[in-house]
Amino acid sequence: MKSSPIKLKQKLSPKASAAKKKRDLAAANKRAPLRNESQIARRAAIKAGRDISGMDHDHYTNTFVPSSKNRGGMNPNTKGTKNE
Image (cartoon, rainbow, N blue to C red):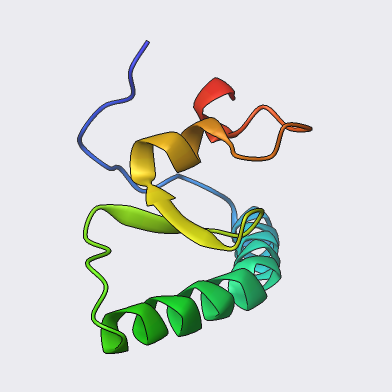
């Protein structure tokens, strides 16, 4: 079942809201080094004149691959986000 396109705010108690905020921040900070690596690679590729539109930086192969292929997972040891 697909979720609603209307994003409604969760009705959480103040204690639960604070705990969620802490969890969400920890999850975002865990991804920060990978976002930084992607951003550096993307800027370098654009500066070198490569056309990387529609491509994502793949951390496993350290190359740019089509977004659809990267969602499936380039690492043979994992399933990728497409299968979650």
